[in-house]
Length: 286
Ligand code: C2E
Ligand code: MG
Ligand code: MG
Ligand code: MG
Image 1 (cartoon, rainbow, N blue to C red):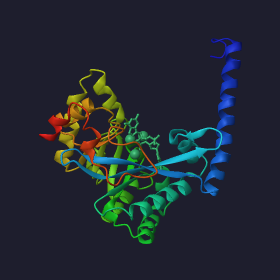
Image 2: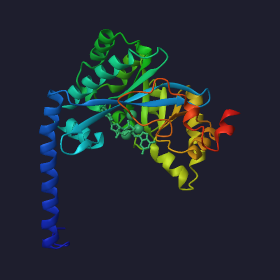
Image 3: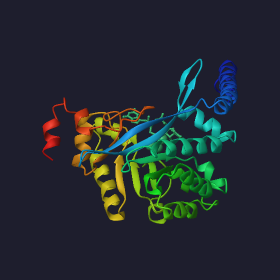
């Protein structure tokens, strides 16, 4: 292989690989410092029900403001934390911070927290979630954990039984990035999900003229028959919103209703966010 692409290019390739490895090593050290000095932040993005025009809650999304580079995206530093034994500490900080924050909100608002699959290997995940709820006083019915379907590929750590225990506490369980993983749909009956999050790529696909509307309609059908609510992620335009509504999906998260922010907009009036758009009347008359 190295020969086929030429020795010069092989050299270039190894150099790039080296740079990448050095960057990861540097970020790993800086991330552990940031954690130690409490420099990580939580941001909160609204989730709304467009059928009733209500704010239902927020998803907690972690932010790392880096001294020199600005915000480093979680898609870059979460994998580094997962590979270096730091994800559980970050995960429990996230859980604690988000539950503490939500305990001060109106009681009908939920908080969704992303959990890394690694945390299911810790052995004390359920106990630590219970502790967090006890310390913050948050009603378990207002907490929702988000997992991706890749969590379920390997159940050697009894992930499904931990999820059943978590659900039995009253906590909601959301399937994140639905439709992008490699697992079979049978897990939907094994795991007590309360919500399915349609991945952003489907919402992007709506704009590409692909026949995504029928896929969304089918996902809504699965949700109806399993009594699981369906939310669309990454919704940015009123056109996307109308097509989601037409396919039966009314719960929405995306820039259209608000970006993740350190100060959650508890008084958000969903319709007013799009009031100036031409579709305003159509939505009102629904
Ligand atoms: P996710 O859980 O699927 O989160 C949704 C991502 O989509 C967030 O990116 C959010 O900022 C972004 N987003 C929301 N609405 C829109 C929109 O309308 N348009 C576009 N273009 N993007 C939108 P973010 O915050 O960069 O997070 C990326 C991923 O990192 C998350 O995907 C989640 O898997 C992971 N992550 C974030 N926070 C945490 C955390 O506290 N713990 C763990 N384990 N993972 C986290
Ligand atoms: Mg999520
Ligand atoms: Mg997602
Ligand atoms: Mg994701």
